Amino acid sequence: MGFAGTLGAEWCDYLLADETAIPPETLRPWRRNLDLEDQVEDEQSIDEDRWVYSENIIFCRDTFFCCDHAQSEPRDQQASWDEEQITRWNMRKQLFPTLSDDAIILGNFNQLYKIEPTTFRTWLRILDKVPNAILWLLRFPDLGESNLKATARDWAGESVASRIWFTDVAPKHQHISRARVCDLFLDTPECNAHTTAADVLWSSTPLLTLPRYKYKMCSRMAASILKGALPRGEEGKRAASELIAKDEEQYEEFAIRLAKNFYYDTNKGYGVGRGRLGDLRRLLYESRYDCALFDTRRWVRDLEWAYDVAWRKWVHGEGGDIYIR
Image (cartoon, rainbow, N blue to C red; front, side, top):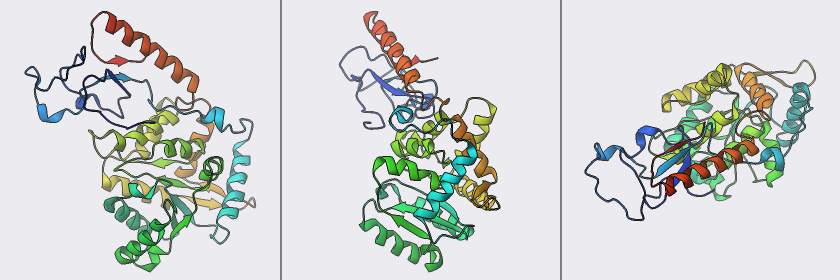
């Protein structure tokens, strides 16, 4: 995938997006994009300081993000929910053999440059308020481990810093498979998980995100991808409202609430997740082969239709956005 944002070049005819990734109110009020010349000054537009995108937009139905997990990383469609729970628990024991059964695993698998101070402080507060939680990060790169651990000690003390656990970056197949061990993925609001978000959702792990800026596409990507992974209808809308925060305070509140109300029932000899977080995981698990995000064929059909519309507009000297319905 390329750069998630505007090129600031009107000779770029279209951007592919959706209304979550690019809110319509961030578009330039007057756009035609019918020639190769940039329109530096536009006397017809108003509120010049409020728009960001000068390109026309192809708005996808659900999410504009394309992935092929159903083809490249197929999962057993016949596996029951109970079988998935057993697989998760066994993998958790293999990956974190010393972790107590009542521990909750919060995680983030992005490159560490995406963790800026505001987000890291929020994560530390979450760990402080959920004493049975650990934060699982990757050595991505290796030096990040010592730097983040030292910062955590300075900002939150050893009791919190000791609950930040690092593992090595894994090969793609293993990375996607073991992502299911994480109980809740905490996204980075400044620059979201992109491909990693799709990987995590394919593993059925709930993802908590914050679209921090209206004008910054890379901070809105995970919300778009998450909506594509959820089922259409009221159940999916409710889940989105619990996993897409409106501000920093709500992001922290959602994480703490989901973590505190989650526990593992081990009466069957393996851990069965209980609470709303467990319900969200099951929703993602049962929707993975029916949701928009992983329906690659539908995505291709939609885009080919949009290409045809874009060409016809060009032939007739027309501009304007394209909405795939």
